[in-house]
Length: 68
Length: 103
Image 1: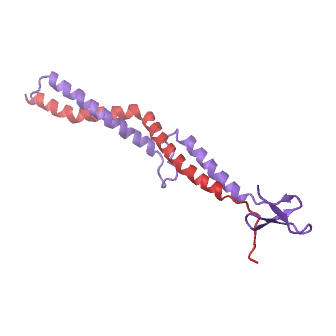
Image 2: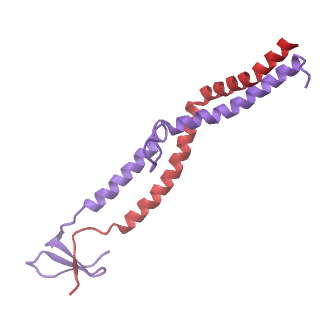
């Protein structure tokens, strides 16, 4: 009475382990993804930043010398 | 180690003492449905692919919202541009001092 008939294996322990592993892998892969993004776009980003600074400060500097 | 009890020699059912579950079996062999295990293996394969894709910034993060391709590459641009901007400002400030700009 009330006996369950099943031919499926008990994967509860494996499932909990996989869920924990999924969380840890998510953290590690996000960190590595950011590092790979920085390494791949490092030079271009640096150039973009320097050019932006030159434009923002170079124009007033040029106007200063022209008006001097 | 689980303990199995054969209900009958002619009936292919086996009783598991620890869990109280009757499982299909035939003699000394048990017929087990491996689809739950295959699902877990597929999840593990997804995690392994995530490890591999983490080296390429063009792939989206694991368990992210749709249309997140290239988010790591864009973040790389912003991070480098931040440092480059301050370096450029420093260079321009030194140039202004050298050229004799009065503050």
